[in-house]
Image (cartoon, rainbow, N blue to C red; front, top):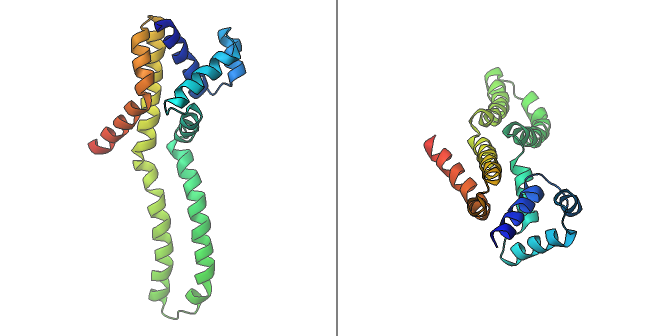
Length: 171
């Protein structure tokens, strides 16, 4: 029973964390592809969707700077479109001080966007938590600590979420 749970833990890690497909996992572990599908389906029946976790992991594994870049591109497009729409009205403002205030509001919004890149603890804490848990799982696997591997795999996402919450609170 513990051996089956340990096998499931390895399969789950290879699928979710390493991004391998069912066939590749089966080949690597010298098991039937159906075994991989069986464990995925069994967890899905329990409400644990490996594909959803993998998808969330892929998003969360973007570095905070990659997330920032995506957000910045979207924001800049919106900012430039808004500026383009306001450009004529800004040019018609005769008072240089009022014109500067209007331009300053665009610049302020841009710099507000840049500021979170320095303070984005969620992405960093999430990625660090996942790396630490993966390291512990690998170490436990080397030491044949299957019960602990099973526990960590069952509570992996909860541990990451709680760690991120604690990091946010400690700021």
